[in-house]
Length: 287
Image 1 (cartoon, one colour):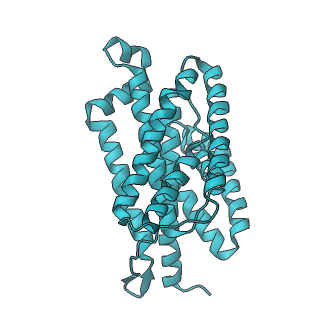
Image 2 (cartoon, rainbow, N blue to C red; image 1 turned 135 degrees about the vertical axis):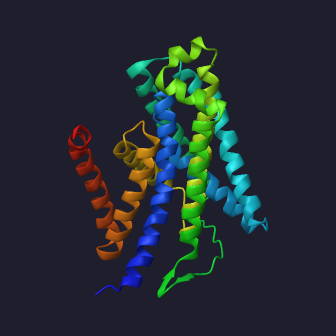
Image 3 (tube, helix red, strand yellow; image 1 turned 45 degrees about the horizontal axis):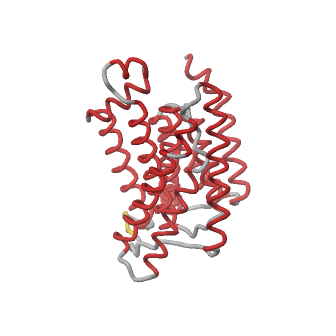
């Protein structure tokens, strides 16, 4: 019989994992919703940030500085990718752009993994050194609490940016009506660059938070991309709020199932939950 305190602690860990999934889902939803490009390299961005920060920490760099450097690296890398590879993708429209985006970013992901494997082959982590937190009779993992708080703050700032700033409103305008945005002087290409860099930074942060709770390696890039796709699809593909909700819920499902059944079966349950949600969502939306 599982005690209430143990269940509460597992739930907090599930929320922390869900917060990381929410960040990955938001990252992929931002780019697809704005430019109809499905970024299948988003897991690689997460891994690059985590590995870079971990290597810097091992060289004696302070954790906050190393984390900022890791995020800066993926931000610059995202900018380079957007201005080169994605410039070719954005020349096409409709289904052609979607397919070209899939092939381009998939090829990018394979290339990144191939390069990283030759230079970094072990597992990496970013332990925060946060002590467990006593909440009544429950002992909660301090790192999980930090993960939830950081992810929540970042998501709130992102939503505030999209809803309160001029650039954010311009981004939302392109989401809703690209031609109308052009008529009022908004350059969709520049906004897409901004959004792609933002998505890379959000994915990088997700990688840092995951590395704070567990070891990750190059091979996790594909797994992170898969999770991001599931979260984005379940959340509605173009809905940032839906991606956040889906990420949190799926993180909880995966963590609870992993504790009671096992990690392998938990992954199957995660995919199953996503499929069930996709099947019932049209009925929910129409009701």
